[in-house]
Image 1 (cartoon, rainbow, N blue to C red):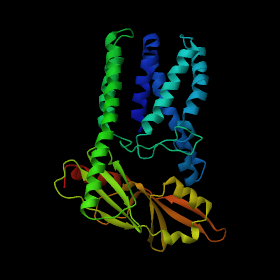
Image 2: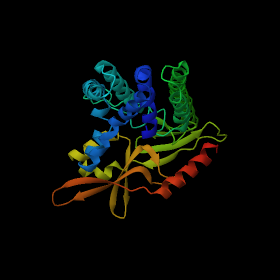
Image 3: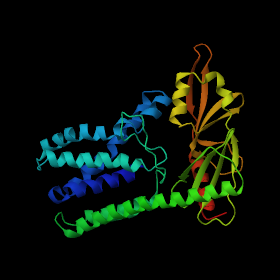
Image 4: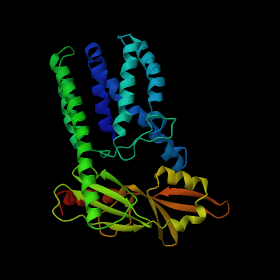
Length: 333
């Protein structure tokens, strides 16, 4: 999830663990702890693209990380804070650390909660930024912050924030199931044979849902809003995996395919090849668009026979147009 959401969650967890004893400092340290796992993004400055993608939401988002580093930070904080109990501070950091990846597991990218096992949990029920999750949570956190440390209202507001956000997360599973059944019915009605399908919410909401459907030679993409009145329409994107046939045994290509969980197409444009990770959809909703959110130029070094993946830039205008298109589409077709 986005940084603000993780800060709010961390602060609320910190308050639940130590709020009665240390007041707003519990929220402060919880908020700090809630952002620490995402420091793995710094790897993009010192490694190649594929390695950075593999590291993201890996070790720092694991239970093992929480177990190892919570006592260390708990001990450090206890050295200079008035509240000296290492156990209390350690529990605060542990729960702020571990709830971070649990929340991230609900997103499309998922998280390696059980690192070093090569298992990425991705429930794909919520987008990385969802105002309906974050804003009510933030309001209750602020209300709690304004109360006295020992006030029953403070505990009530904080618990309500945690409860409502958790109920919303549970609701997203129901919404995902309903959307899944809609896509499944549409495929059956249109007599489309497929191998597997993958559903996820569109940015900033859980009203508009997208699907990737794998067939033998192509992927079918479609979306569905709970306000739709017209049948679901699928757009076909050829896999074009044969375009990288000579590169399939390249170690970096194999790793990139693994990162994408096999949901990828290859595009050839102006003599250059692009790797498209389908899990995050298109950058715009124009019919036939092949501009994907995560699209990488495959840079081939003919002298060394090595390849690199260069992520294609996305500008503010791209995001602005996508938001406008999504808003219109969310209201129904």
